[in-house]
Length: 137
Image (cartoon, rainbow, N blue to C red):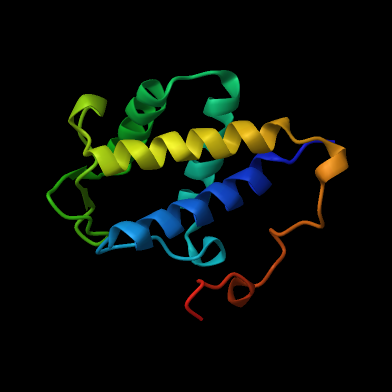
């Protein structure tokens, strides 16, 4: 049995949070279990699109469409209340670090999707938010 899309989404979300910390993101994502269901659903959908073979550019375009449909617009800063996001731009206009996060997302999804039963560990998605801590704690 392979890892589920939801399990992979949890892992790529936490990987993205680590990259946000590395890059000094002003509005980093919350731990997986603290995020709204809409964001978790969007991440699972992204995992599924990777597994279906969509390119990073196609996935980004669909993410932009999803965010726009939710009322988000481009803004120089990410603001959850104003629904502005600096990544609501075409793929070729994304900053290098943002494209790097997408490529890491793809790499993690592809590698985890390739792991079969032999490497399966107990489910991490049932862990409490406090069970996932940063290296500095």
